[in-house]
Image 1 (cartoon, one colour):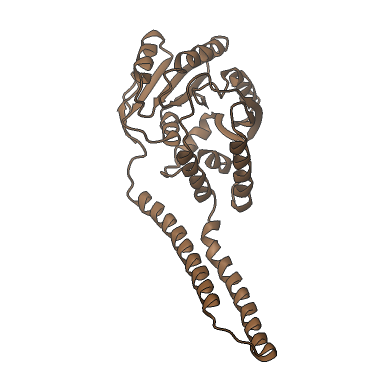
Image 2: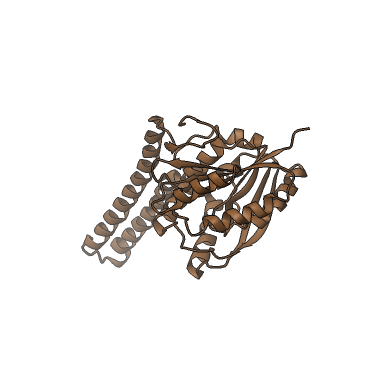
Length: 316
């Protein structure tokens, strides 16, 4: 009977300081497991020596395969590229900075052998995360789950194991603006959660700038919910209620107090309030329409500058 195979997918961007240590840690775990395995690195347009290190590791170890994207497409699309090219009976995705500890790989595989088709890790704490980042992350997930039709687990990460049937189903999702944590949560299948405390990065600094984190947060909201489009409706009801109260106040001032004053402040406040609401709602509609327009172009999710040495797979 042939051995089962595992694919480990790792998106990287300027991780030259971490690569060799990460590779040694993965190799240490996998050498003790009875599976055929491959370690697929997806380089997302690195500008340091990441690619030369990956090419050297390929030459030294046949388990290592790497894909070089033509430019920086972002973490979520680099991860998607790796999933598109993974052939294992199960696929494990994780980051290469050691904050997703490879020592958890046997645990994920153990739950997979028990019959779970998605084994999702949940970060209970991150060693080098600031107080502001922890609080804003907790508030974001609380708000996202309040407005979303899809449950998204707070602390969820892109460190997970997926059975091949889940990977094949995931490949049918081809939207450009993607929030993979939400997509996986919406797919169903038999899922198991594994909690862990993320250690600090082995070296270097996070490549997720505040701008990228904000973009990912927006993608999460727009991927998982249409609630923002309903804000205009709710604001309309609120405006009608406020207008009625203002009308009652005007009647009171006119017939009871007999003290009417020039209405410039009230008029300007109303104009600014309703004008701001209209612009906000139009902006939200424009964001959804813009994303719809981008999807209708049917452009590829990513472009590959150099594919895996073991096979020449076409661009998506």
